[in-house]
Image (cartoon, rainbow, N blue to C red; front, side, top):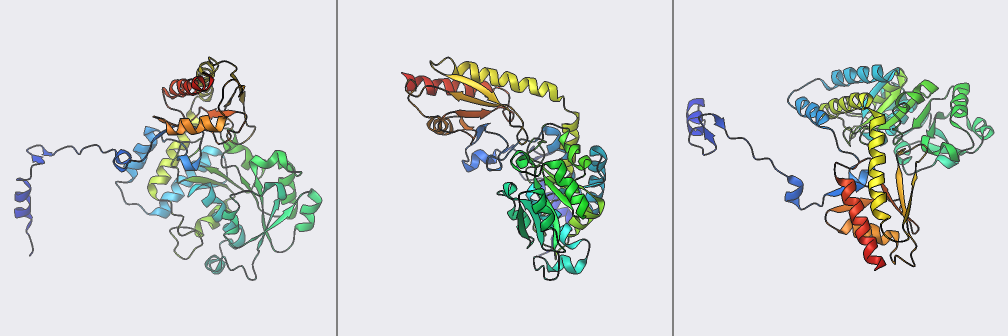
Length: 396
């Protein structure tokens, strides 16, 4: 049966949710509560498992507005990439599906360039460049995103090793930024070696803001590609990241991913909402008063530390990781013959309490570790009180 427009509109008038003013306002839903999923206070940090950071209202509004319109996705990525490159002073940029997605499409770009046949063929690299040089001390849990392209990792330890490893199969050299202190080839020498041999250099700096200056530092240093996570310190969409660098490599990276169907990263989609949200998050981050934010972190650390030290034998200190997650990490320690509970047991009780509190995974048998940069207003007071209560019971 085909219904005409007028009878349909007439029928709408009889629905209970419709009045003379139109549809009633929709009920605001809390889907997380409906599903019975546990929410928590984040005293751990920007861990993916804990959904990393929370997006500011301005980011959510940008994504909501973008969701109301159809656009040409390539044109959107062009425009967002130009804006980001202009903000950060790099040659080109794109929004990726997280930093791991950037590792995949960036590696693919170094292997295929803009050759459509090569783009279609990977991860079959027969007759193509197929090796990535990496320091042995820089191997880590995310290099699977690089290996997914089909390449073979070639491990080196010294500059001499690096030079011997270079050959016609070398596609690029990968540097894990947080591992710089552990490697024998330091960051500036690494870039120089890549330049000397004409090899693209790729720096994974995913978790390395703050400080804000890092967003421009590594491309200016000479890296051909650099990636940052969008959903960590920048507080953009958790599913987004940034790939910055040489224009030709960014263009090639884009050809290796969505919306192009026959590509290695077709499934690593980034839609207009993530692109808009990532751009606005970056703009907000660049404008933020970082000194004021650091003072607020210090205030939260002091609140938690003061509460914990009300329990006998408890001491506390602050560690600042030098590169990744460069924010205050509060270490709470105690004499476990006086306060008869271990830090992992305190961590477990914090998680199982209400509200649930996640402490930092860096917690070990010696110290309970918490971070404060992902906390919301009032969280520090709750965390401090709960830590004091748990330790007090164990000291009774």
